Length: 273
Ligand code: DGL
Image 1 (cartoon, rainbow, N blue to C red):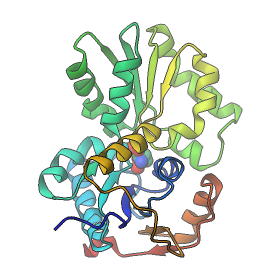
Image 2 (image 1 turned 90 degrees about the horizontal axis):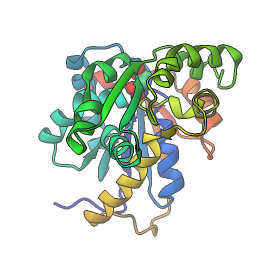
Image 3 (image 1 turned 30 degrees about the vertical axis):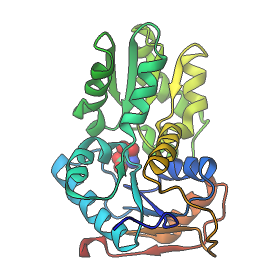
Image 4 (image 1 turned 90 degrees about the vertical axis):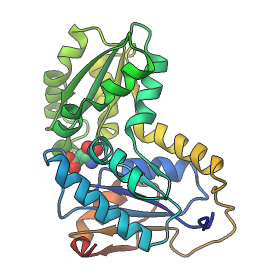
């Protein structure tokens, strides 16, 4: 049976970071309703094994299906890297990850064919960006680097702090030396320190924000599947947020980055799924 086009889109992440993707969906697809799940009890995914991240992703998809979503966006880069292929084969619902949309834009934008990718240890060790980019253009050289300190700095709210600038410089110096002209911000949190990264890398390096590119890709996917919302069904809470731990902490972070006051946040037991 075809899903209802006015059903919500399910978006999930290991925690709060995926709100950068939800935010782009809110901005670019304002008629769409969203059910967001942040796995705050099991975050971070970036240092977990592929096996566990696949298991977590499956459980979350079962939960989102119970919420009757019409499509699912894996907002977490690590979960997209490790689990997208597996779950796409298992579930009938359209599922989109954040890696392909970012890689596609990077392949199009790079002039000197040197693309940098930053992300969690899991995302970088998966080598998934390199395999997409090489498929799109075998001449592209891909340089990946895990930047694990960025996530806690962002969650601490140190977006423009001198300490963050120092860490940015330590991690990204290599990309300058290797002359990359395009850098993929391959982790949910990194768009929030984009301006600090921009200050260090300079105006000539194109920064790719997969959160934005994924929202655009979601629009094309929904259109292609005949699932774009009619926008007619209004709801009191068009955006619903679920977490696996500490709903109040999540709410505070969400309210600091979303253009919308988060009201409905609920804790659920994800291990049940
Ligand atoms: N959401 C994760 C990602 O985009 C970052 C945080 C984590 O390690 O769970 O890879």
